[in-house]
Length: 197
Image (cartoon, rainbow, N blue to C red; front, side):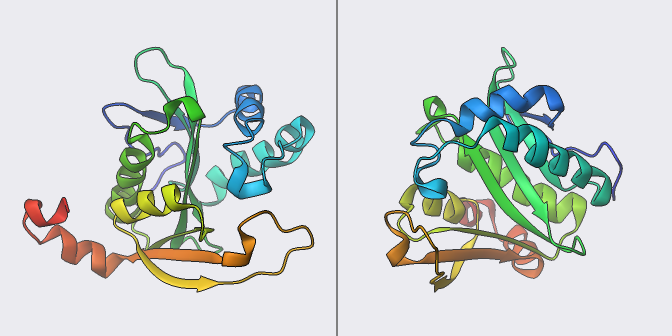
């Protein structure tokens, strides 16, 4: 299944839509919070020019290359406020997708990252038909690791990368999580009580 305007379904507390050039300011604001960027850049904000001239154009072009995959703005269904974004960034051939999310600090602790991630995992397998959903984060990013586990992904490896300017915690490595299509299908055959664990 595909289509140029294919967007993951929202959830009770999240509405998802494609990003647009009008989202530049909201993304810049999101990326200017040192806590939001702590495990990505060590708290350094993304320059507005980078968001406007590099990131957003690349993300918009991705919608056409891999229909059904990409990055979507996450909005509050009631007022339409920009809460952050969720992503299923496609592999080169579109058969795999990297799960990602970045939410305003004011939304943390409410289960929105888990809620949105679960919806995207379901969408990736049931609608788009990818063979694997995966994600990476720093080993010390316990909050993000819990979200990935609650979304059904499992830890597959810890690895170490070399950085010219490592941020605190880099010495503990990066972790990769994944969920494969056959595992997803098998989980759907289990009783709901077991799936909810």
